[in-house]
Image (cartoon, rainbow, N blue to C red):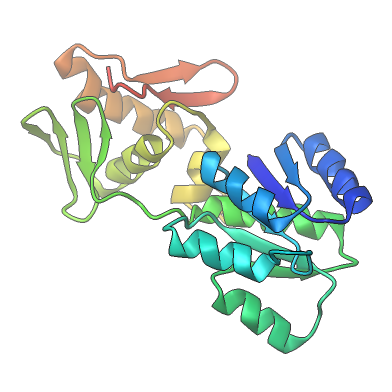
Length: 225
């Protein structure tokens, strides 16, 4: 998970950064709103954590600018402002969650993971990797001009892999995004569906787009080949 933390309290920001990195996250830090906005525009993040009260460009304005520019990365406001109307303003400007200082670090971690699972970036109308295409709204998949028949669950797994194309995704991430956190079945079901997809979107076309990353999970080649 890649996080952008924007907070002008340098000691607090450094402590949060170290804590998040200890949880295996990659964290970039900005100490003012304008710099944070530039960094958010230049890179892809799973979640952006914004302080509200910053000199110059406050967190509300940063969030509003992101949304106006079409950036729908999940935003968590982490702030000392605890009035209900402050929270309303944060959510109305496009924020996704609100946590007041002082805060529980385990709660912060849980909320960041929940926002990352939600994946608030707007999905493109058609997801593509090379000649592999998926139209989620029409529920159609193609290799080149040839349509591929998929079940609803196979399509959901392929949708997730395409949205994360080129990245390694774990079995747990696939389960959380498709079956939900309450899933209590056998995690090996992921291998079953990956096998089904390979039999439909790879082998008939002499491709190996869906790769197994041993001990971690799976990756869909960004070129679809």
